[in-house]
Length: 84
Image (cartoon, rainbow, N blue to C red; front, side, top):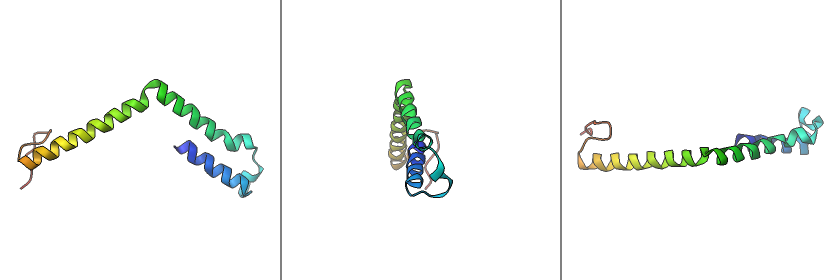
């Protein structure tokens, strides 16, 4: 996402001829988009994206379980009693 934002910023600065970016080659200005594509290709092929989704779902599941246990007056996942 950072590469995409840098690319958009670079294109905007180049288009409106702002600062030193106006003198840069379009290849340099557009290179963050190529890096974003490379990052997304690597993240998808290596399983990084799926692993992060699973971690996020597990954290939400555990928070829901802890919240339900707390509402019932049982200790949470770390064995702590709820505050009264």
